[in-house]
Image 1 (tube, rainbow, N blue to C red):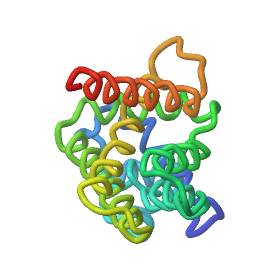
Image 2: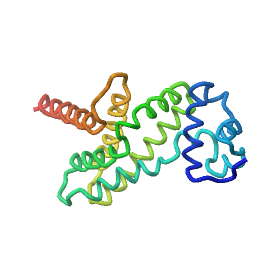
Image 3: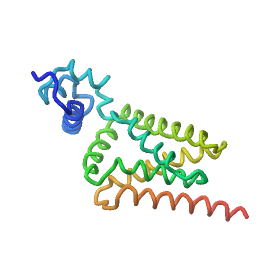
Image 4: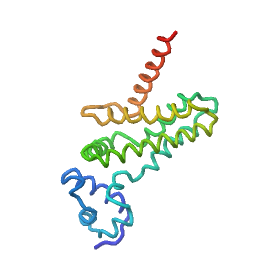
Length: 194
């Protein structure tokens, strides 16, 4: 068996996703994933702590991309402008050629409650990191937490729309539309009070 080749993690991820989609997450073993690309189970565990992490590997890249948007935003940006900057930066990780992969990944996640919980945890980690960064920029509470949670929610809603069958818009375009809807919703609430 081949012990190491460049791109081993990526090959394992691609193989795992295909096996999860065809055989089911619970029915697929780490050994089967490794064997499908000519590797050993031991090699699999050098790259991933368990088979769940094959689907969530790279979560830190998502957080870093969102945080980069905050760092690059002007100092005088409002909390919602910072949310928009974070979303725009994060969108770079989702070019249109990743849409089919993302659809398949989401299908696997939706079929398994434990994976759904792990996905919620991923979004919680993102919101917490954004909240910390916003507070670091001097945004006070509760605005920092509300803005961070809004960013995660807008991303989640936009992602769901982006992977919907027949959707053609970029994730960035969808995020902008969802963020505008959120702004309209909060503006309508404020106008109703006055």
